[in-house]
Every structure is written in C-alpha cells, then in structure tokens.
Length: 320
Ligand code: ARG
Image (cartoon, rainbow, N blue to C red; front, side, top):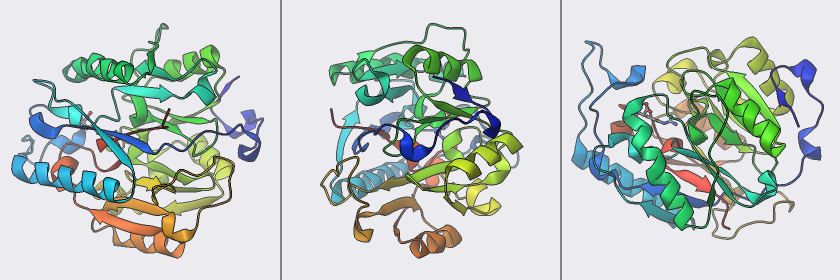
C-alpha cells in the first residue's frame, strides 16, 4: 500500500479505512534528569543565543500535575525510568513508534527511532527495552532512512489505519516509504517548512476522526491540501498560539471517562471529549469549546523552553 504526497495520489476515503483501537494507555518518562544542556531546536535558546535555564523544581511539579490530569481522567499511566545523561528523555513521544497489531498485520510492533541528533540517540534502546518488557516486539528499520523520530512525526489517525508522517528536520521521507512498503501501511507524508515547527506534533493534532487542530503556515502547499481534503473539521491555530503557546501539541481523548469505547462505536458524549492543552491558548480554547470539546489547561512552561509540551511528554498506545 502506498504513501501519499499530494491530493492527486489519494485513492481512499478515511471512512473506508480499517479500524484502530483507542490509544488510551500512556507512558511518561521520569523527569529526574530534565534540563537544557544543548540546543537542537530553535526554542531551546533565548534571544541572546543563550540556552534557556530550567527551573527543575517547577518542571517536576508541572510533570506531576500533568500526570495527575491524565490519571484523574481514567487513563492508565506507566512511568519509564530515567536514564543518566539524557535530559530530553522526558519527551518520550520521540524515541519510538508503536505499530499496533491492527495496523501492522504482525502483532504489536515497536519501531525504534533513529534520532536526528546524537545527544538523544541513547534514549532509543532505553525505550525499546521498556516496550519489549511490556510485550511489544522490537522491529527496527532496515532501510536507508537517516532519521525518524517516533510519534513526534508519526501521528496515527484516531481509530483508523492511517499514519500521518511529518517529513523535515527530524524524519526522512524514506522512513515512511519503508514502513508503508514493509507493513502495507497508508502514510500521508507532510513536508514541514518552518524550523520552529520541527516535528509534526507541533503543528497538527488529530482530535478525532473528523477534527484537527493545525497551523497551516508550517506545511507546504501539498501538505495543506492533503489536510484540507482528508480532515473535514479543521480548527486553525493562529501564529502566536501555535509558535509560542504550542497550542497544537495537545492530547485529546474520548476514553477519558475511564471506559474504552469500541473503535467502531458511536461518537462519545460531549463530556468525555477532552483536550489537554497548555494554559493561556485562549483563542484555541474558545474554538474547541464551540466545537463541543472540554478544555483542560495545564502548565508546561518549563518544557516549552525545550520545544515540547503536552503531546510529546507522553507516548500513547492501545491497551494490548
Ligand atoms: N528538546 C527536545 C528535542 O528537540 C524536545 C522534543 C519535543 N518533542 C516533540 N515531539 N515536539 O528533541
């Protein structure tokens, strides 16, 4: 099955794709070693070119508060142990990509990332052993792709067997080509064109089968067209909230009442539909409420200094 770079190539409708389970099991990585000791994206430096300073106490309380929000909503959270010398491990969305059995055709597979920067490469084996201890079969890439950064650039379409694949500074198009060839996956490749939006999860969030949050300026024209064609309801985020507020780096769940819903079941009641988002993104918050989502604000200011927020501080997987 193919990958898609433009609308002319599309040969499916989302509603005809096979189902995927809800991703309502979360892993978060212990923030013990979180700090900023190098810069690998533009957010990590201040205006003078200096590395941002992290308030580690505050970072820890923000991480704990986020975990409590997830748990209070009935989501199970498992904690990945810390790893010496790996301050970015807390962004555990990046070192690997889960290919659930429904999509892989070969059981629950864990695809280790190839990190774009050497500073983060050590996280990959750490996550792969954690995944393996939880029953995931580790299945590395074997093709020529130089880099692939897990669920930073690979976003599963909610409840459908479709992967959205960012192509840019952190993931090569060749990685998506290999996955689509090897596992028969449909992958929509989206080129990222603005260095501030270096991962797909900084500029696109699929909230449910038909709805997304997005910042159009981060994509090439073909990418914008693909999103417009495939996602019926698009909530556009303005530049300030996207670039400074990380308003697209959210977590949306339908299973927040603690009860997983059948993947082909009816739409969940409004009170179960929650978006967890960085505080202060007032315009997006309003748009979400109007679209019938509950909005749960959290503080991730210490993590935004490193270029990440809610979405990338967790890795979401289906239960078994
Ligand atoms: N400092 C980390 C990096 O540059 C932040 C990663 C945030 N993750 C994300 N998916 N946006 O790799």
